[in-house]
Length: 303
Image (cartoon, rainbow, N blue to C red):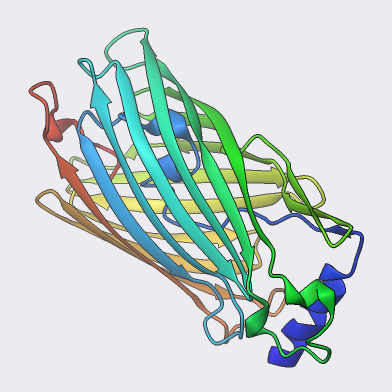
């Protein structure tokens, strides 16, 4: 596999225009939409902290590894929100790091319906570590100087929400990022557009069903669609299934202990993807805190 990645990397670098990097994949956005939409900041009437780790296609040499840390809180009697997103995605010898601060503002229609608008701003860093490649000609100038580029990053999003319905649209990073490297034009990043929708069905006093769909679009790649079905039991436990483009299938489970939330996702690709033996795993740990007197942990209903 190392030889395969070396050949692919060499072919990509030597072309006049590299294909832009894609956003990292997440499977637990169902309970942390903040990763893909800044309008979600402060929506839970509390301070929310979450860390996550995703290993995609375990056993596949050079496969993606993603770590993330997010924090956001509601402000000014829950009318506004502010937060921070830090994520790093490593694929082969390439590493993308994003750091963005967020702001959101809510427009309420009544106690159950409102629209939230969000903005985020920060920077992204793209780094290519050629030392991880088996290079046949190490004195080639293309490989002597590793690519290390830092650029500004801006994003926006909007969410319409009721007590049961959730609709979101976002462009987490609006700017298309390019860089010049050894007289080559390199596309570092292209815009990603997200559409997200979910609805809560009350099956009983203890059980809720929450189906959801996420559509992701980026220029030069096929449209990606995630389908999720999650059962919420007593606002403490959640189990569900998911599929991505019907090429990957998975199982998710979450548990809430007081203010702590634990989550795990297992995914298995089909032979139409990379093969069933290269499974993916994602774990998250979240914490909800009451920081201001207008915060209310009993109103958290996204679990």
